[in-house]
Length: 406
View (cartoon, rainbow, N blue to C red):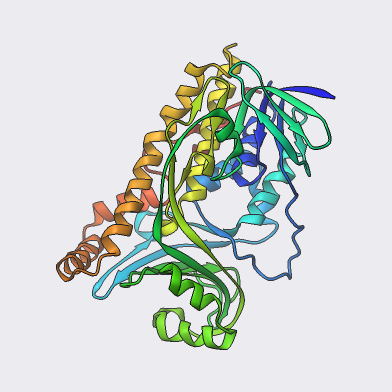
């Protein structure tokens, strides 16, 4: 059986589902393909390891497409303060300083995905095909096709890669990447703490890599310990008792008491950027277009901004009776996102290289810079705006504006 769509989104994770929701209710016929549905959410279950720091701009996207209610009905943790320090250099960002109620939210990735999929299923013009296994992907400038394991062949005018850093769609379309591996891995832990609900996320820079704290709802937290691949492998293999002792010896007093470790995992860090985000009949979003150092938790945020920008471009093209798969239309999307993403990636690279250097003079400069950042309010305010996703030009969905004429 063959079926044709205007837009075929390969990947129903957070970014792919967000694009589907952004196109929901439009005149476009859309399909979202996903290998397996995320597990159902139960309120009393332990927190997932994979969480994201959702910026104000990203939350606005979720609210505008109607998915935030699904997040709020499950669980999330708002934060109002961010603190960064190394030795004597210390800067704390507070939402009160810029008359904002919040700086962002910490949300489990699965909660975001479930909320988006709930909303996606409400749109009559969007088919959510899950679970499906893809046998082959054939890119062609005018009409691409995806063949499923059950024999169905789906064709489309626009093929969208939302299938992650090792994207099969990107490979099928012949879009190359620049990449390299950082000399760090990240050990991620979910813990129960002696503190109750917290409203701060913090990061301490150390000679071996940053130590990060992300608050979860209730007396829970997500910890990230960046270190060499060898050190992370050794730490991950420790018993809970020995790992607790290592956390007590290494993490700062701001962490407080750790009651227990509820989950652990690790992943390597890679920097990757596609040479182009689009060409005739194909577009890349999220990790398929870029993989960024997770230092400031911006990976999901820039992916959601990709989805919002592409949705805006496609809806505008359809309303103007333009060919949604034409290269000039898709170049508008690339212009909206590529330079902004490159700026964020370069900034994270700079942080990685500057704060990962133990050279004493550079360390003194870092501490001085953090101290100055605390005192220079205009610079501090600008940094907060970017951390909230509100710096630079934003897609309309990120500003709370509808893109579909009613």
